Image (cartoon, rainbow, N blue to C red; front, top):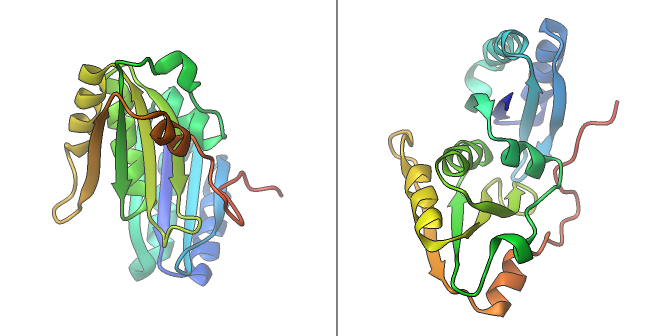
Length: 199
């Protein structure tokens, strides 16, 4: 497990300034830094705990009133980190005929990442899909698969600890039709999916 952190900022100028502050403060790896719908800026970083904490703190201070949301996961689940690198579970290995799908949808990408981390840590489920921000009006969704009791437990855990007023939509789909599985595993037709920052 690794440390994962993020900042969601109101506009691109604040985002670029925060990115500069973060990178100058500590040695961290930038998984993504760029504009997202609708004109916001998303920054996702990883690294050792001390470096990430220092960088995140500096970015928050620099962002000021432009900060919409921040996230720090000291021990992010390996499946979440893999998904951020475009690696997902194979539905043939995690979904049998009697199993279930679980879907999650959040209004901000960082809320979804935090909820998904909780879900993956409490139950043996596979992550089939994760989409953040791109062509989603700054929102995000994910699809989990596995035995029905495990998916149900994961969805329940995802709902825990949400900030006041934050809504996380979720649905359990027992024994999903083949068409639903196919739709759930789509990687999405996106003009610019989240991808690592290339210096």
